[in-house]
Length: 129
Image (cartoon, rainbow, N blue to C red; front, side, top):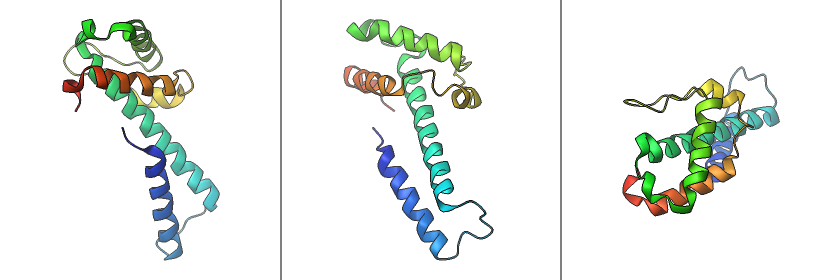
């Protein structure tokens, strides 16, 4: 699992160092706003990553019989992803609407999704990418 807090702090340090060296020319945003913008971008990318992991693990019903007590939760999350994010999860390949993920970021419990994806990876390690 990616440590997003560590990744955020790494980006923040890189940004601060670049700004102090004069590498950030024509920047009109205060440092706090820039850091908040970067933080929100990291959170958004984490959400996209979690949804992608979930979709890959459940794509075309793969391992449907192996999820045990997670089965109902997985079905509920799949339905929410389809409806809230305009995700086409059937057929060859799948597509996620990133703008819909951004617009509806509060609709899905991403802490639950992260826990479910971790449990799914433990149940079906051969599906990991």
